[in-house]
Length: 231
Image (cartoon, rainbow, N blue to C red; front, side):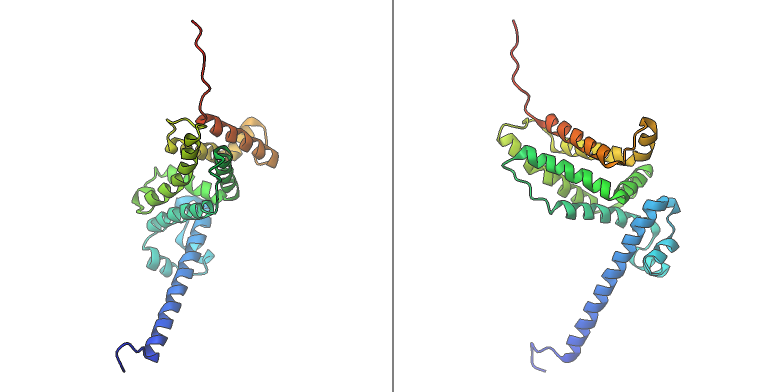
């Protein structure tokens, strides 16, 4: 065979390799999806490998083959849910000529993601109960968090350039404010409903809270009006 030519055997081998790689990716994706559901439903301690393999239509051996341990699987679950959040957030196209509207859109995105992805809230709550020990093992969370905060930064900078937002605004603080206002409501939904005597899962209640927190975030970064000191 001349140099540079590819034999039919090589082509068939490459095709088989590609198919196997694709099948492996599908299997890992099913396992991760099942693991998110099982851990969110039963917690870390209650999330059993056999439950996950059954829900993934796989087997225990494959889980250990791809993820080595339950603990390492949970690390990948954390990375997976943050990556899914980032992918959804990447579809936003904020109009930087209107930073206030863009910031409100960012708050609404966070809020709606938390509402429509209760598994995201559940997994974060579980990890905080474990004092972040799995997050500390991840090599990806730093990159993923940088991506999330990075989406907010150009909005804040645009508002600062226009003189609308304060120059001393810390982007990390803005992220923490948005995330906490969205997370607390959803992570404590059931206890707060009983405590306050209001159905916080009702669409009207959720919309009222979104309106309120959107106003709070905007007011938190706005340039304060000049005051006249009286002598």
